[in-house]
Length: 244
Length: 230
Image (cartoon, rainbow over all chains, first blue to last red; front, side, top):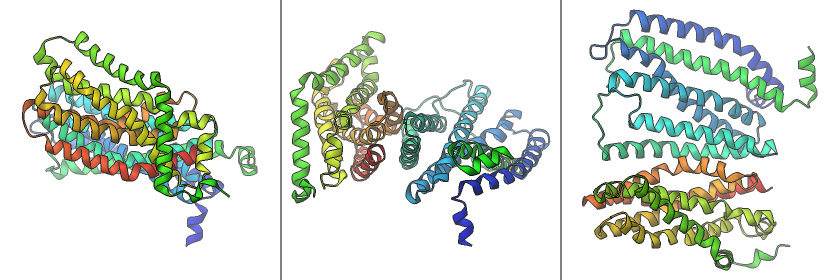
C-alpha cells in the first residue's frame, strides 16, 4: 500500500496519473456543474426577498470556498515538499496558485455584482469581502516571490514557507476584519442568512460545489503536467514522453 | 572548529545586538531617514484632506498607523541585506550559534532603531493630528506592541527576500497583507481611546499577536534565511 504512496513522489508517475485523471475529472465536473446550472438557474424558486438576484450564489459561494481550499492545498503541498523534500509538492503548489487566485478574483467579482442590486453599491467594506481581498493579496505575494529567485529551487522553498506563514495568518486576518467592521459600524447591509435554505435551492448549490472541486482537480492535473514537464525538461523520461 | 561555540546563548545575543546597534549609530543618516519619512507622510494627510480638527481627529489613528507601518517597512529591507552581501551573515550562521539567536538579535536591533524610535516620536505627530493627550497612553502602548510585531513579521519577509534583486517591492507585497490585523487592532485601540471608550480589548489582542510572533517568527525567519542562504 505504501509503495503506491511513495510513487506519488515520482514525477513520471505523477505525469501519467494526471494525464489519465484529467478527462475523467473534467467530464464529471461538466455533469455536476451542468446539473447545478440548470436546476439552480431555472428550477430553483426565486428568493422571497432577493428575487432572482440570489442565483449568483451558485457561482459565488463555490468560488469563495475554492479560494480558501486552494490556498490550503498550496500550503499543504508546500509543507510536504519542504519537510520530506518531495519536489512534486512544489510543482503542485506552483500549479495551484494561479487557479486559487482566479477563484478568489471570481468570488470578488461575483460578490460585487451581487452587491450592486442588493446593497446599492459594487463594493462595501463588508468583512467577508475584505478578507477575500486580503486573500488575493496573499496569493499575489506567493506568486511574485516564486519567480523572483534566480535559482528556481530556492524560489520554490521560499514560496512554500510564505504560504505556510500565510495559512497561520488567514484566520487571524478573518477575525480581525470582522472585529474591525463591527467597530466602524458602516451602512447596515442586509446579509444573506446562513443556510436556512430549502432543499430546492440547496441541492443545486451542493452540486455546483462538487462540480467546482472536480473542475479544480481537472485544471490542477493539466497545469501540473505542464509544471512537471518544465521542471524535468532535462531528464530522459521527458524526452521520451515528448517524442512519443 | 567553530569559534563561537564556546560562547553562551545570551552572550551571543548581546554581542550581535551590540554590533547591530553600533553599526546603526555609526550611520545616523540611515537611522533618521525612516523617522523623517514618518513625519513627512503624516504631514501629507492634513494637506491632502482638510485641516478641520474634528475631521483630523477622526482620521488620526489610521493616518498614524499607516505611516508607522510604511516607515517601519522602509528600513526592513536592510535587516539582513548588507550582512548577506558582504558574507558576514554566512559567518554568523557558521559560528556555532543557532541561527535563531542571530535572527532574534538582529530583529530586536531593528525594532529598537525603527519601531521604538517611532513610538518616541509619535506624541509629536499625535499632537499635530489633534489626538487628545488622554489617548497618548493607549497610542504609545499600541504602537510599541504593533511595531515589535511588525519587526517580527518583517524579519520573515526580509529573510525570504534577502537573495532577491530589488527585493524590497516584493518585501512590501508579502509583509503588508500579513500586517493588516495590526493596523486594525492598533488603529482601533487608538480610535477607542480618543472617543473615550475602553481600548483594553484591542490592546490585549495586539499583545496576543505580539506574543505569537515573538515565539514563532524567529523560527520562521531563520528557516527563511536557511532557504535563501545555503
